[in-house]
Length: 415
Ligand SMILES: Cc1ncc(COP(=O)(O)O)c(C=O)c1O
Image 1 (cartoon, protein in one colour):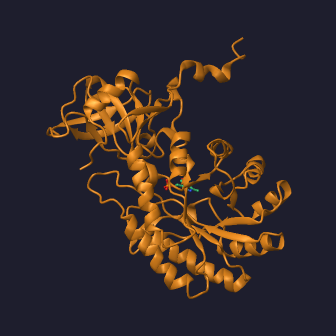
Image 2: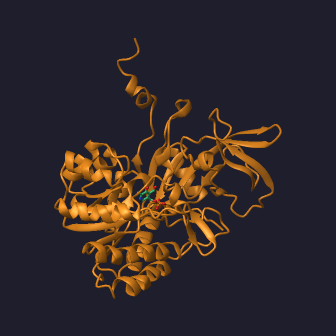
Image 3: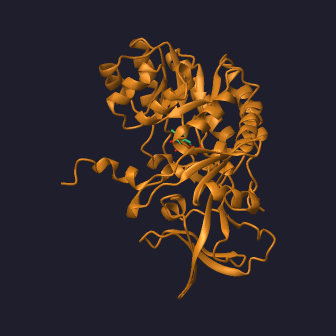
């Protein structure tokens, strides 16, 4: 079962002030989860989570995570600028970008961020535009497929990211020659994994490689970034990841591979987005139309502009009809938005309780890669973001877009 973190009564009250649709985040859930992650990796004295800003680029969320000891992982100029404005600096910022424009390297360097190079050619590019910083990281791509037992989890050989193993070895040597002194390694091999084995398996690959790097180049890495990829159960039948078991799994391989090789000082970093935020966000929307043709539709006031994952990936997001949590799911609906796109559906053939016009629907697990992926197709506007605070009050943390925002880039171009 998936239970919303708000009730119908709470949402009715919130909607008096902030019209639907809106994204709502749960401060208590976010903080408690961040503390669980930190505790699970407390065996590693240098552990740090660099929250993937792309998942939920909101200053209030970033500052809240900073209070919980997190840094930021940025992938673009605006994410770097947002981190800076939220007070992050220096080694609190990881810059894990790809196909990177020179000005973004310049900005990352000016902030003292740790630059994570996606490609061997970026060494010369970086050197030309900013020079080689003392502390630097390289992204690894092992190629092939990434499997856990018999399950193929993802296909790194098809992914545009990272360097091959020979390139990685060469990159460290070259960076050292060019003056780098402190080195890290990063890899992201599978997305949204709902298994406690992903991180330990990835860690074993990277730890073994760290030993080889030491043997072949004499370089002792100072950090290994396991990046993102710990997922959340979007469907109610799946068990969530157990972060304690994941932390213990990584600890086990750390002791098995790194400690005997004299690399027990390596700091472990994570760069999670989805795991940090997804379950602690709801997209709240209202049923505004009911339509019966060849299928039975409920039209809501949100659309793919507010949450793109179902339209883009066919992703499942659980839906709760507020106030009808215990009613039988005996109606089969397509829950649709208003875009002129037939894939603008939050649910297809979903069994739900009978929905009446005016009912509030909570779309679950929208706290990461939700609002952030929004766009403006059909001239639709992005919603507000709200924070349900620990004391039960609600704070607006981003206002809804207005037509003026939409037209702002056309200012001066009407005639
Ligand atoms: C470089 C990098 N780090 C971290 C993340 C966060 O991934 P997730 O939200 O799956 O944890 C992403 C997501 O796309 C990414 O590209």
